[in-house]
Image 1 (cartoon, helix red, strand yellow):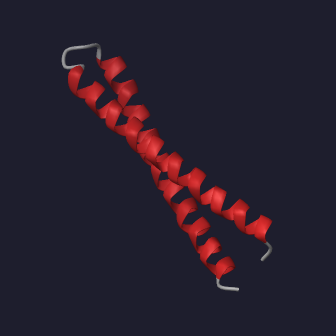
Image 2 (image 1 turned 60 degrees about the horizontal axis):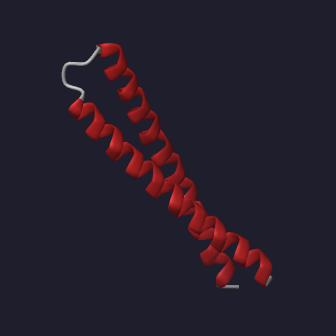
Length: 79
């Protein structure tokens, strides 16, 4: 694998690591917001739970992509 292709794969890994961190931070923030919403309208609380579920799905998806990208980098570097 040439140097440029390897750099692209390494950059993809770095980007995916940032995405996972972003979604984890977002999920933590939403969880704190839900905890502080005690007596608010259940509609708004429900919407926050929807956002939390979406963040959890994105964390899962990004982690799968990250694992694949890491395997691609390790396979490419061993050649």
